[in-house]
Image (cartoon, rainbow over all chains, first blue to last red; front, side, top):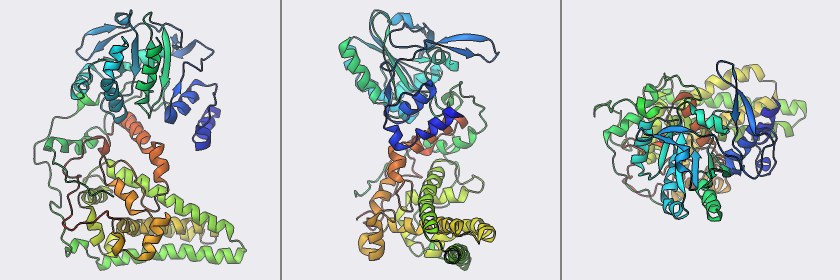
Length: 212
Length: 299
């Protein structure tokens, strides 16, 4: 109830402008994602892991990925149905961006923005990978329609999203839009979160890649 | 304000977007399993799906634009309930020796009406179609309006307002009966009900041309008391996803800058699988046809 009240207060415009750092991770994401985006790698959380309960009520540890940490590996199917592992990208910087769903306005804007700046990413020696819960067929159609030159991975069941601790928005109703930049050693150097200004993900990640 | 260009007509396959709202309604989705809309999208339907009531714009003398006695009766009853609220608030305020609270509540009612008009307009513009229960005829009317926006200026007064007047009668009359001795409540209800009922008139004025509108109306539009012609004109441009409020338009900037409707659309998509119309390319039923006579949006 307290976190709900806090989240409601954050709806007020004057409060939205502030740079408060609420302790609860969900409230941080509500404030940051809703309008202005937040560079979460600058506001490091004190805990590096979160305990989660699965549907069967057995306790598993979900690692929340922070700046400076090495995220858990994954193997997911790409738009052609081929298995792709995170380890495949080691040796080069990689931008891993989690987005809500194919064929929604924000995700389309974001994908097209990555596409339009793809040459800059290539020049920086980086690869780009998009991850959502849609299946391979959806990714294939989406990539084809918008001529996306990068890999899209199917995180069906949102397993990887949960493992990496990508926060949700709007009281858990929306999958969050969060981007991670991993350096060539696979260490996270940037985490950027912004639900409603998707193009900013490109600017922020490029800015960091110039320094790597 | 720019004159809207003539849009090209889309293939019939895009019409299926309107029907997907029904087809998807029974998908059971939990939050974690992000929608697989693409795989369950039904195959494109045959070219002739259903006929829309109007394929050509109504002529200025078309009977469908004229007021009937039924329309006038509903407008009269709507006005009656609103005037009853306002009279109650004035009398109650005088008797109770208060004025600030009822005036404030009236102002809040005016603001509420603008917000309510936006939310309702957003819902009707984006979801459902002519076959939707209760709202089907309204949705169809809004679709026709988007295709031929200038016809609203050709509608007679009661014809334009009667649907809202009926809703106001049903809602305000019981409130009047229960709360008639509470001037603050009556102030809110009277203003909100009145502004909602007359929002279609404000809407019609927003489609008018400056030279043809009464000077007082133009002044109120320019003062921001009534929704302006330019602000509402922005709603009639692709992708038809902003400036939904049509009373004063005071909420439009806040709602659009804070992406409130975009957020609501995303929530409805992930929770119910409903895809709003504004996400798709407008099909021929929505894209505006150019008016024969110019100047719909000229300031």
